[in-house]
Length: 495
Ligand code: NAD
Image (cartoon, rainbow, N blue to C red; front, top):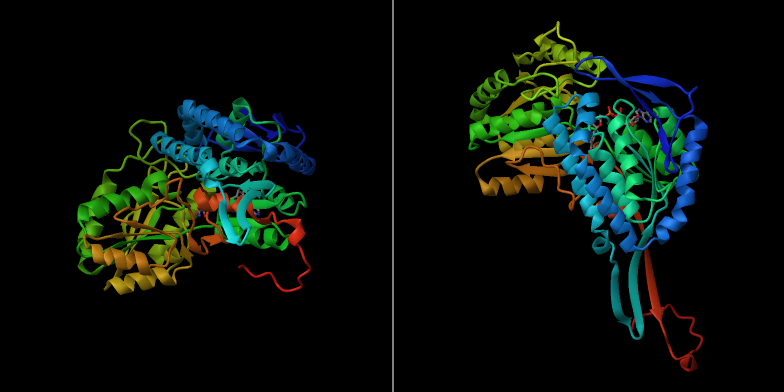
């Protein structure tokens, strides 16, 4: 059984007397690791290590930082199979999905490898006579990343490669529910040759996070997780004068218009709703069926659900694994019960999935005739439950989305370019897919929703990530002939 400790200043650290808890394999319910929660002194040690490493690291040349990032990228690639196994063992998602997560994480390291280009700054020669103006970007300082259970590798990789490329040092506080894969990749940073203290890892729960949030030597906080916690992180972090980006939960709508190809739309809805058992912040959880498309679409989705293979993530033919915990499994079942009680039609019922089987399974569930006042529609369920809301028109579909609390991802399925363009312009969400059900932006764009899906001003990774992890400095410079100098109390004007 693995024992997960903290990683501070280039070495594993853990005080044996600290609070621990068991990490389970959600497919078997067996314990696979034990994790220690940080003591207050370990949090202080991690911050002190990151602070001590800052001066040298921010002075390291672009060439040196880039070489180490490339090395790290290659090590993650060499170990992708093992990393994906760790993810599957503790998260439950199927192995091919876990490999996809690692691949999307590597994209972010690759973007960070090119930071020399992104952070070039800008230069205006002769902005005024004999005066040049230029902008440079400098590191923010000690940065913290707090990450959720559902992408234990990809989400940390959204953060720390970009942060350290920009010359910051970093402390990762991953989810305590599946800590082995994040611990493994942080150790790879050491193998790649990053100096001690540049990247550190602290395990724990709310107490650890709150200590990091209120620590005077922490300068910036990146958070990804549920909306109530994101709001708390944003409010308390900014109240303490820190730079904060906090990404929250989601309820992602897929609008299917009457002209859409039914098979394409049904394949996409099933893939995006039930992949990773719905534990994705970009999972489709609501299909908004416009007009007469509803009936054939519900039938096509239901047919596909009948053929889904549910089982342990390492079993080669499994398409959908278990949920993360028993507590979450019963929460999802409660939502299905509440949808049924509020009048939704249960077309496919995942509550019946192999009750005698070990593991935190819920089968793929399809609810039709869901209305926007139902709990099952309003709340983020984060499980394999897809709701169908029937509307009469394109405008009705846009209104449903606009009135929703969240604004993360959204998709439209149509064959009409003009309507798709109108959708892209008017829809109230941060990431839009046109015939693409999970529009997670590539590593060289940026990821972020609207409304209660993001608190703060910058999205994560890509160019916005680079802006978040740097402070802008603008320099105005001139080299006049001192003999022509004179006192002038007027406000400087550009001539
Ligand atoms: P969570 O909010 O429970 O936990 C996220 C992190 O916050 C963990 O590291 C956890 O230890 C810490 N935490 C939990 N409660 C806390 C508290 N009261 N105070 C301080 N810290 C606390 O989220 P989760 O269950 O791990 O992940 C699922 C959620 O994350 C879903 O809501 C999902 O939509 C969201 N998510 C969002 C995105 C996005 O990009 N918007 C991406 C992935 C996941």
